[in-house]
Length: 251
Ligand SMILES: [Zn+2]
Image (tube, rainbow, N blue to C red; front, side, top):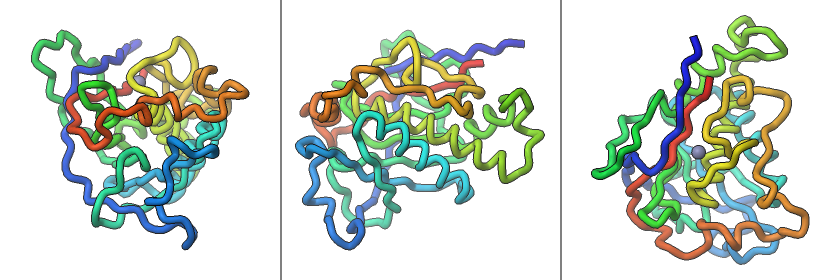
């Protein structure tokens, strides 16, 4: 009855293709090339979302709102950007995401004893040193499947009207994304509680109570959390992704 899906990391090679993304000018004013969130006192990052899964607008909007609300607690602001093709800005200045219907089969690294158990909801490309590389990939089908089996205020989500289901799927998508962004910015580590736990249940992905980011990312006075992140800490921001952290649902 209980189907436990555990989370493993560093065992998977994400299939990364050339992105061909570019960032457009925001609000007609600030070009991305002038921004470096690693040195900015009020860091913000473009969230470049490729929607390959035809995610409904209500879901996508809810997902972006969720990411923004969660990461605002750590003083990081996200601005949604559509991929438009063209040259790729430095990964240090963006977080590239592709929402797919289903994720591919990860390749197990030689020598790794870890295995994926269960279907991953998402994974994050990282280079051999744990710095972000490639992009974040999320499976909308997997997220939707978990949500459809969840309860919201004690009622099965699948008994709700379609619009409400789409909204809750978007909220879950946003929390999954916010978790993966945690890996993108701060590396592979997990916490015992909150959003950066190894596995999140469907109920937690849609609950009115938002799972919190780790306290040391949101501590008052930590006004530049990104400065100490793996995202900004050197490495090879355009390096080849060799391993991925993935998030699976916990039942
Ligand atoms: Zn994780």
